[in-house]
Image (cartoon, rainbow, N blue to C red; front, side):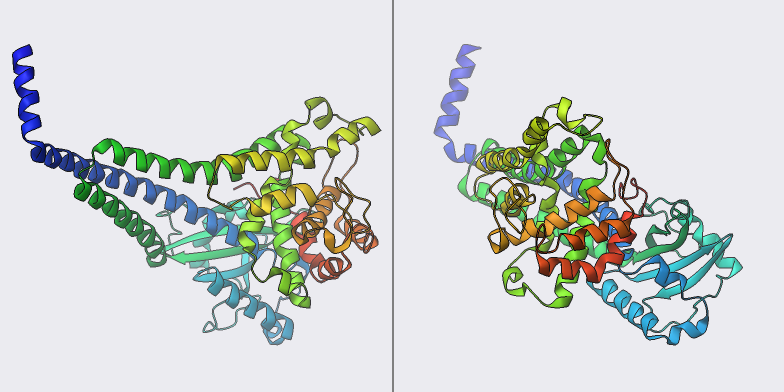
Length: 449
């Protein structure tokens, strides 16, 4: 056996070119297998992402108007009102921005479903008209939304009367918790395929490029495996561990603030839209990545991980000493994000997260914490987050208080103009206060997809 091994080693040394070819073949085979696995993974991940985006679009639709406005459109003649026409234009723009084929509001009354407004410019106005009996069965997928829960149809499980569509629905509730309207969005099969196709082909081309490098250079499978692992680690660590894992960990510890993270994201988005209406701070926001900033807001309370349960979960008001400890969560949060950044070199993905974590409790008059910043010295993302965070705290139950009604919360925000909050941002809030209220009235589990 030893003699055979010596001969084999000698033959390999004398035929180094053959060795390169063998390793190249292994590399190509390995890359092919990895490509197949990656494609399967990407198809599944892409479907989950698209379902999530579709559901998010339905929820965002609920922020474009109020239940009171929708309830005022009951007759075909209402389609001639300027407000109705303006709402349709909003839907048309929304559909284009979100790549949605069909966006609409439907009224629910007893066993009837009536049209209110949609984004189809070519469709004959059907305000206040009941759906046809043969169409009503198609609304079976709306039932969870009618019961007060947002949902999205699984891809491939379409409403029977509208094949080729995937749909998502979210309810709009009045102050009594009654479902008065449904926000719906549809997307076509071919649009889904386009979304999948782009992601899949980019991955395939990337993997082919990696394989080509290994074949030409003659490197072994181990090097390719290391490169793929490094790339996968970076993506997974950056996106999942940071944005979702840490945020969910924080909220799971502080059970009294359930849904706070996702609601504040919605408030931020609405507040920024109000700021855009008044046309101020555009220079400061010119180079912002708005979506990244809103996503990063998930980590604004990450420092609460370092606060003890005896304080975080105390069923009552905190003492002065306990509150002083609680206030340290902003500094802990900035420190945690810095440590995460040091582990993920070469990325500025967390540039907004640190700002939001350490500045959302600063106040316009300088009486906030941790640094006592005032006026425009407070970063604009922190000033925005202050309003979103405070409004949600006011309209949510806490161990030491009942939730305030949206009108009362809005009054408190107004009273904080120039003291707690940036006066310009309070002006922007005034323009979208109804949309804040609409979000606040949703069931506290509404935004859990």
